[in-house]
Length: 320
Image (cartoon, rainbow, N blue to C red; front, top):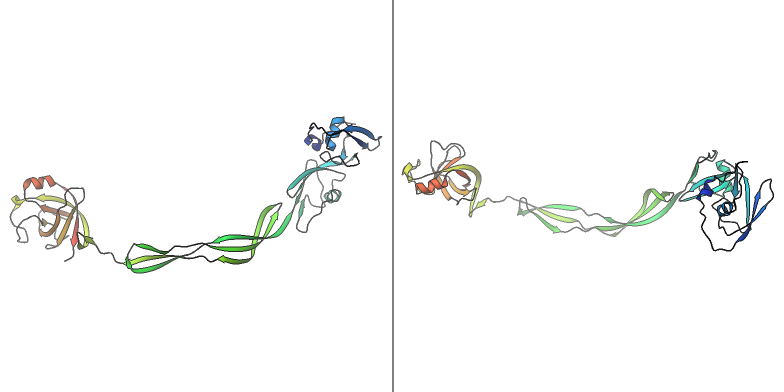
């Protein structure tokens, strides 16, 4: 007979030095005389390995190698196999006589609940190295508290300008208590359903007012209809004393394209690049080169006009 001791359970056993007092154990092997040994081992595997007990091929110890020595000190070596069992959240190795799943469960006194399942199935067999898996399905009632979100209510306010928002009331989450029927498999939650709930604290909605009032366009205290970014040049008295409108050329009288800005229109001309702002003006003049979004600003001297040069300005068309 081959000497095996190649049981996975024995390989898992550790020879840990112990100060425990040596005890007498009785090793019974089928067809052989019982063997009496003295050992301070704590598990069957420790004693067998310490004493070099031969285990024939196809035989295993009862109890299994990983189990503690029984009170009566008797260990039987019989035909059988070791099987690794994963029972719910627990895992262990045991010696069994049969490879039939149903018989193994009876040997190990494992009871299945109504929702439990086993792999391989009850009428199946365990192969070498295969794991016997028992899935424990449980249902339990769990009470949990969870926050209850609030809603945001939006209201129009005719006293606020368009684009302006005002928080009238901050929102606050509520608190609800839920009773759930929770299903777990091997200790892990697999699903739950709500079977009852009650509100512990009501949520408070957030209230926001949005403005509907049309904003007034104001520049330097004056209302304006629109604003236009224009390319500006400058001219001086050398261009003539009179405007196309028959008024005297002066600071504040500017030349425009009448198709863009009608003559007589009041304007406010603002610098777009940090140059001193021209200010209030009236469209009173025209020019051959002033077409489209072009404007010509009158200055009192040639040096001022040259200093202005060419630059962009923002032209506000004022209300009458």
